[in-house]
Length: 337
Image: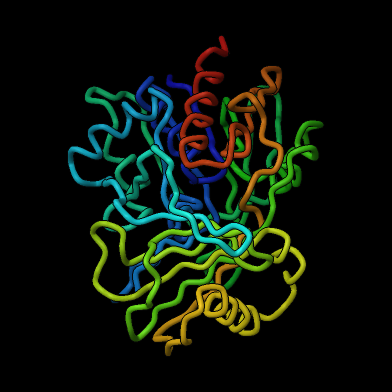
């Protein structure tokens, strides 16, 4: 009988871990509280207001990630973002001279996660089940098996679910959330900073000659013309990210005030006349930016058949999440149990 593995968290690390295990003949069940898989590969793709409000782009430096992306680039599910990029430091705008290509999912960033689920190897013997809208509240080790309990988030009335019989458990989530499920002494040392992500569309093209700008501003850390990415509909849509410190300090402020302050700061920094907004929506990422990532790709507890993974294990980049996932899968496959 194939090994049974449960993964909590359907972000990129969880997906790459799951696909690796399934290709090796393992049966995997992923639980996630959200309505979509992909984690911070988050996108809004309803009507014409299309935004990537999580990860903005990704680079590919590790050969394993490069090989994974190659067929997705060939098929058009991933494309190079040939935008104009800059850095604003001490009030001065300087073109970004980075030589690393920036890539995005097409038609939205979450498309990368969708594509992953279509890339399983021919002849795969393991099975993959993804249970969305399943909030895991408790995990327990009984004998040599793991059990999972939680509630369905899509129900008007709370409905519990229980599942058991898993040989391995993988927690793919921010350290603070993992601590709530099953504490580990290394987790409190790993801190993720918050970030406000504001999606906003304007009724006219803004006079800003760049499409993606890193800032050292007190309020804004990144702004991007989201509509300049390949495969996106026409329009003037921008993503504004607030700095971690400001996001943390204003965390309890109401969303309408945060939105107003961020748009005002955006107009001031780039010396533009405030344009009328056609749409705006704020998302608060409580756990966004790893401050002290691990050098390794995951934390393992072999005696418990337990693994912790996520981009915080290897860095803050999309590529880091992918590598953490396959590292976690390798740890499971090395376990003689």
